[in-house]
Each structure stands twice: as structure tokens, then as C-alpha cells.
Image 1 (tube, rainbow, N blue to C red):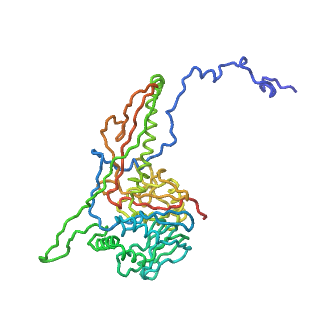
Image 2 (image 1 turned 90 degrees about the vertical axis):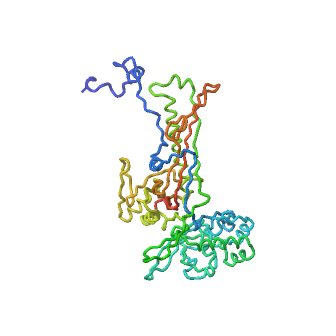
Image 3 (image 1 turned 135 degrees about the horizontal axis):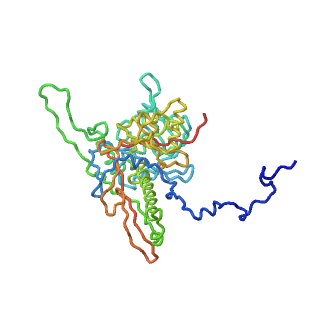
Length: 477
């Protein structure tokens, strides 16, 4: 039976209709008479930039911000650096020995170079006990690579963990200046590692034959005997609980003689726009404005990167080494976050790479914990112990797949971390950012100089803490 074509449409083998056979205007032709609706230029690299939003910004009219502090008597610890040319050819860089508290400020480079040559390489296996509490100090150690745990015996015979020592840290230098130094805690290797070892007799040898070193160490030991508060600042004598009319001791609050000053840094670029583009192609969107908008976004992204990574004022380089801890087992755990939180008062926020946040949540999931949230400017932000954890993709991830989590107390009133900028600058486009017309060159190119001025200051050392060596990769269940 034959089915009428009108009931089924053209047969499957029939050719496609030609333009002459169309019975209405095609969409391709119709578009020639329509106006396309366009979006503004999009930019994938724009991030949330929570650090810029959450920092309190202080207007620095003079371009420089000075942080005045009480006189600090306890010298902070730094980290030494190494030059490695093979498994057995590892040397400490002599200039970095001044990162040891006892050698801070020592300037005789010849002595430092000679001391550096006396260190010897020693490989350590996982589980090996390096030193035991109560034993005499016979060697000083520089950690080239590995993770070591400080522990001691608790009140009831249990093991108490005191801290973790990792790459660049020192073990034993705190005994300098002590007549008969003893180890105050035991040290065990949690991973295999490499140490540089200096016998204690070598330290005594250099002290005996180098008058400048002996005088420096003696001055350091004397300074450590001066009265100081629990934060290492010069003490002020006070009395409490007395009765009658005793003689009350007097004193004064001493200041640092060389306080740190922060000069405003900058990020800038030259925006170029052809006059023909600026004159003719501005409907429905102004070309110059769109070029400027995306340029400013890029500058703000770099500004946040600098606040984290700049070697002069960035958080990762300015944080005090006494406020840095390493993860105990590798991934960031709730215990590690609690330890970081306990190191300061009034922690306002954490910032971490999104992968580090995911690694922390995996550890929470394994323990059956559900982190809370905090409401910030209408956004629900994940939080730990009520402190919001903000993502920041400017925190680097190392080739070993580790990253850092930063804890901040902010604001001048709380002696925290603050952002620095200057408002009211010429041709200001946004606070602390200006756009200055640079003229038109012979090629009809309009040029604008776009500049952002900024910096960051940490008012007291415990305003910023860092959880380091946080492994962000997945581990087997």
C-alpha cells in the first residue's frame, strides 16, 4: 500500500530543500537585520580576593608607616639555608647562620665561614631517637630535610608531644651560653631525614680562639638574663597583693630604637588604546572603560599575590618563625588547626589555598566532624571554631604538593595585621589606585599609566601564624 507523501513528509532519500525552495526567511539571513545582545568582556582569572576585602586598610598620608614596639630582649629564631650539590655534598650558607638566635647580628663573616665548614652530614632513619631529655648536649643540629618530633614524659608517664621540627630549623642552639647544657626534651625522627651536625666541642673551640665570637655570645647570654615578660619584652617592675607601706619598685617602658618602617609598594602597567577604537567603537559599551576595568582587575589580583608572597612584606615571608608550626602527620588535621588557633588571641580569619581547605575537610570527614559556617557580608563561609576559612589561590602549592594555612588577627586596635594605602592621590580611580593620562604618541596610541599603591604591616609578631607543610594530596583510606 502506498502512503501519501503529505502524511509522512519527503522521503528519506529526497535531497535537502534548496534556498529557492524555502517558504520563509532563514535565521542566518534574519540576523543581518538584528542587533546582537552582548556581554561585557569576561575574565577567568578574577578571584574572590577575600584577603583584600577582610584586611582593615589604613590611610598612610606620608607614604611610610612606622611600627613602634616595646624593646624586645628575646631574640627570635630564623631558618638557615643550605647549598646542596649531591646527597653527600651539603653545606650551610655561612651568612644564614645569623638566623640562629645566639648569632643574630654577628658580623665576622670569616668566623661564620669557618664554622660552616665544620658541620658534617648525617642521615637519619625514620623512628630513630636523636636525643633524650636530661642528657648532656654534645651536638647541635641543622635540619636539611625531614620531620622530627619533640616529646617528653608527661606527669603520669605518658608521652607528650611538644612540637615538630622541619627543614631549616635548628636543634640544640638554645644551649649556647649555658654552663652545663642538658636536653630539655627528646627528639625523634618521624621520617627519614638529613642533618648537618656540629659537635659541641667545636662551638667551645671557636669561642676560645675567637674574641669577637666570645664577646658576642657573652652579650647574648647576658641579655637573656635580663628581666622580661612572657613575650620576651623588657619587663616593667610591678607589685601586687602587698600591705602596709613597702617601697614600690619603679621603672619605665623601653622602646625599640630601630622600629621597622613600611614604604608603600606598587603595581602598575601602561594601558594602550588606539584613538580609532576609542573614538568609533563605543556602542553599546565604552571600549576604554572596558579596557580599564579588566586592567584594574588584573592589578588587584597581583596586589593580593604581593600581600601573600612579597619577600619584603608578604605574609609568608614576614610571619615570625616562632609563629610557624608544621603539621604533625602531613595533612592539615583538626588538631593542627586547633594548635594554630591557640597561638594568638582573637583570630579573625584563616586563609588557605582551596586545595588545602579540601584536604582539611577530608580529615574532618574521616573523624566524623562537620565544620561550621560563618556569615560574612551575606556569604556563608566555612569556619573552624567560629573562625571563617577563606579561599586564597595566591598561596602557593609546592612541587611536593604541600601548602600553608595562614591565621590572622587584624586591625590596629587589636595589634593585628593591616593593609596600607594612600587615598586622595592625583587622578584617583579607586582608593589607592590612580589612572594618569600619558599622552598620544605618533602612532595614534593613547596611553594611560595605571598604578596601585599598597603594603601590609604586622603590628606584633603573634598577629599572624602559619601552618606549614600541609599535604594536600589524597592519602589511602
